[in-house]
Length: 182
Image (cartoon, rainbow, N blue to C red; front, side):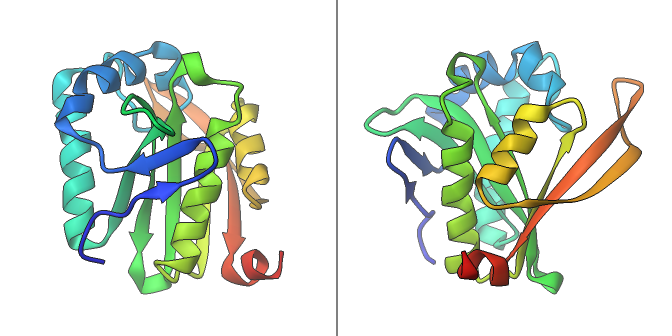
């Protein structure tokens, strides 16, 4: 793979985040409701955070250890979210993370994006497993994980700390064998 992948679905286009996205990244990722539902999203979300995210996408692609995509509506350049895979090549697995801007919630875009990334992970990257976690109170994210074929694997009590508080996580996963048989 010499060029950054472009993933397409019926309504979405997933491609490389760009400097031109910084304003949208700051606007949407800077929403406290988005930050509250994600582990690594800082709040407030500053320009330096957006630049870091774009650089992470570029470095991850070069190193082949992370694939980070901007989520866009098909036929539009506007960013509406982000999604990525953090590879653990030793185990042929990856952790998937994603976020969608609040104005676009409830339209099935997260489910559509996760399905495209799962397909990419298994069919292009030849992964054996893709997993993801969500805060126990974020039921919508659990639904997204189930919609892309994942099954619940664990509930982890007070597993992470954010903003001085401990949170429970729910982990979902999907193996290549299950993916190919469905």
